[in-house]
Length: 561
Image (cartoon, rainbow, N blue to C red; front, top):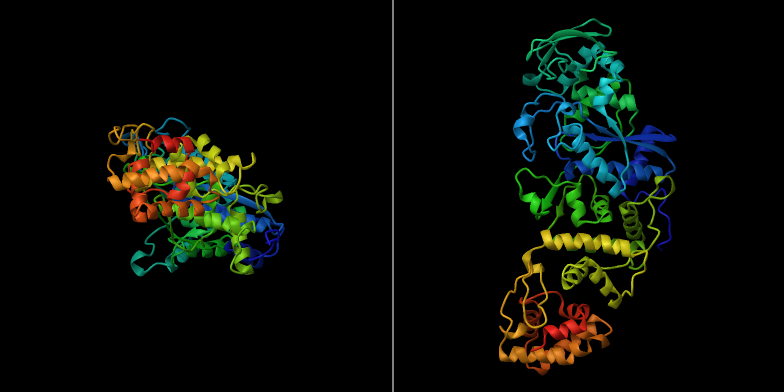
């Protein structure tokens, strides 16, 4: 079943959208899909939803043998209106309020501008999740007068534009007095505190600046300072780039919102049908993504996500959820459940677990294909070339803690598991997951999930550090009753001493319960005593699997009296 093709299926929302684009825009050889944002601050994970949603549709179109141009516009010629709370050098940045953000200096001193800093942050990380759009920089395009014709057309249809905008406003918010569809950054002081005075009907536009008093007439064919207002700029670019598809957030898709007006502007002024679209919803955050995220103004971005989730898991979060559905990205214990959900999808896709029915199989396999970073020829979604090694996230977290944070030692233990020893081509995937697991344990996991094995000789190490947790005179037995101590000795001598003979967790667990029975101790009491002896806590990982994952000699050393 795992070998069947999903070509041209519509079991996934991205495929449904691809079919809609072809149906409404015509069966063309090539399509343009667009996305974009203003780099006015950290590009957070909510913004990323638009990028990856577009990428998924692009892949679905390419799977239909279509050539697709995927453009991502940086609206870096927008006005710098406020300083985000998480920015350094706030006082210095405030001097550049009302400048174009591409002229605001980088407060970190790394890049050519404030805007470029945020652009680089995104452009450098997107390839890690398999997204490689063509980046367009709107400041550059405006400053090289590429939109001169579009600006002049807006001026020629000034009344039409005014009527379109007023169509979606109540009487109290309709445009009053003289109105211009363009704004100007003063060439002398660079702020947008300007007012258009006149247009000569061709290429000359006159303005004056309220901040510095500068006054001039510029030629639209060479002017660097003139820019269309947002509700006109957006549809102008749809026509200029011949955009066939672009999603937008629920705020833009509200009734009478920017997409409604842009649709009319695009058709009535620029003679181009608005692109196919869909609305994407907001994303919530659950848990703390790391120590840095507690700082005031910190938003969760893609690098934060990639510390906890592998690139495939990041793609899965979005590929497995319809864009118009609000969902929560977790950094708490739910991380384990998300990894388990992905692993189930992976097993179904490879045919190692049976789906409910054929439709469920096709849907899960398609989600899995869309979750992969690598694509096939022509950018089509495909199964990975190597079947991954199945290692549950919870188990991997336990192995890493058993290995005192040493990932190499944790991976070396896998050969003892039921899945056999991983092949060399599977190790990179295991290591990527292990790095995420270690970060999650160190920075995000709740305290009750974390543990540290006691040292042979009795010292108990705290789960989060290197200091002894309790005295060493009696090893891990110090807090136990005589009955519990006797039961742990029995566990050591009858189960741990022959731990290598158990073929699986089930028969090991049966042996553990037999110890409790023979010692006339409740099973829960034995488990608590064992955990106290091993990690100084009342509970821990599933005991049978836990014991089988620890080196036998180390176990015997910890439990020695």
